[in-house]
Image 1 (cartoon, rainbow, N blue to C red):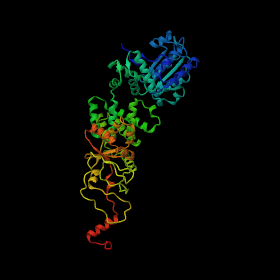
Image 2: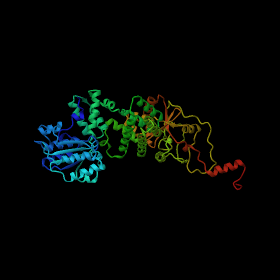
Image 3: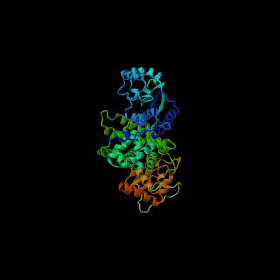
Image 4: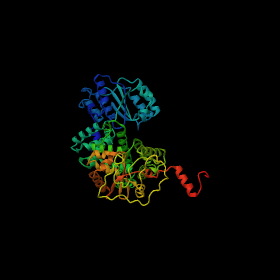
Length: 557
């Protein structure tokens, strides 16, 4: 019968145990110095080596010729414990043997000396499953055990153990195994099995395993069943993972508020039989990566991803605030918790993405706080809800942002026509000393700004600039764009961006990228909020004008 990899390649010595050197070193020293304790407690998450270390310790304690604290693996005791013929080493699952009668059987046995071995060793797995009565029965034996007995208790939920049990054991906490250690072990096992495994696939297996080497080897087993040449695509197929480009595509839809495209991506992944709950979990992990990039000084040491993926994640994090990322994670987490409880998993994920790409639909406190944060950022960037007088040059065409100096005449591109001609002059206020000089506004240009709609593909445009020039792409980070007819209007607080747009080559490069993405050719220009183009008039003057039209006087009013 075929033996699965995690059993076939279970470590036989402490040196083979990956990622738990703080424990294996101590246990080896106790064997060498003959300072074995009567009760050990191994705690930690699944697949980290608790039962493996317990079996190695049982063999090392009874080995006829231990080697530097490790069992030799060749003597009759090592071989007998390995194949189960030595009855002095007992492994018990407390999940199925949890009652007081099961513990009483152990208590009766410990009174007798071992038949062949030096120590009677009892390995009790998932010990937290024992009943209160069983714990009470075991307590006295743990407190005053015979010299020839060793108890090794293993659990994943140490908080469920009574304090009286904890105080009588030597405790060892098993850590989650680092991704690199898992990847190295998986590569070694694949080499021994004559399987070609790429480094990227090994790191992906380590990431999916989440610190559990047993899970990593089980996943490798499934990959080998698909192909003896294992790459990232094979791992994703075996694990049922969505390709990372879909994760970046979905998060880009959230950033660009593109609801339609997000639902199309979900439909495509669903048709490919992707598990929606797993996809939601991966999206949460993706936004967690963005959160770490925004918060941690050296996130590269924490995140398990390729250099290309890390660079893309860094770019996406530039377009989101920390509050946005936490809000996105919260919405996805609530959807993940509801999955499997009535509403279909796909529907839950679709509703979550609609909320994230259309935040006005979410009336929760978190959504309102996120929108307030967006408004605060807009105000900081100069977009106000009241007219704010400031000197600007006359707006005759939105083709280029004015130069830094108000009197400078912006360059114009001959190939592009001017903005729509004025249809009717804006009425001016009665002659009063103005606080600030205001530029004349033509009605056609005002309509151009007022009718502008958000351009959702702007993030993709900036991504397309990176192969041309990373410095130019960085200049437009944090900017947004609006579409109005044949114009693409750019809104950014960075004046350097508009200096770049004065260069015809730069403009042509941006137009080419936009055309590649949308299939349309746009003229480029700056975006000015319509509120800034409103007529500046003193309220008293407007009141006087109304009275004048009605035939009344100020005194009569």
